[in-house]
Amino acid sequence: MNPRAEHLKLGAEAESLAMHYLTARGLKLKTQNYRSRWGEIDLIMDDEKTLVFVEVRYRSRSDFGSAADSIDQRKQQRIARTALSYAQEHSLHNDIAMRFDVVLIENDDKHTHHNNAKIDWIKDAFDADID
Image 1: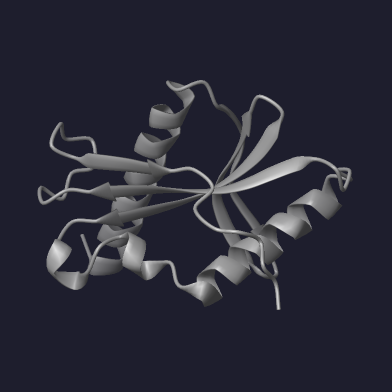
Image 2: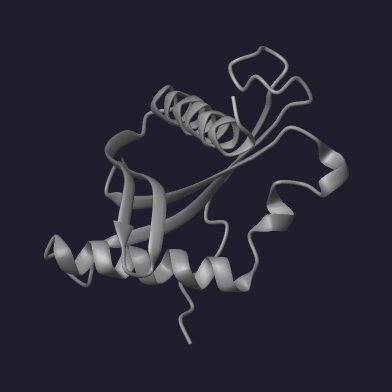
């Protein structure tokens, strides 16, 4: 398998693992891989009365930095703009509660479904500050 295909496969496995992790904790999936002109949001979920936009980050090797290190201010702004696009597209009211979560998956084994995967769920990881 070529490196790009392997990367996409691991990313899809990580998103699936994150989705199962979150649904086991009571969240309900609304949509996966939502795209707008601003970017993509991996998972959009309901947590009771809160709409949750989830960024999933996977790292198989920590020597490249942690998964959290890859979500810089620019990436946060793209996610926030994409979330606003989703809200407008679905005619959601301005008073709906929204939250930005991050699920970090780190595993030295290169198999996200492996029992050794470390999963960290960061609720309300960042604010929707759009410049």
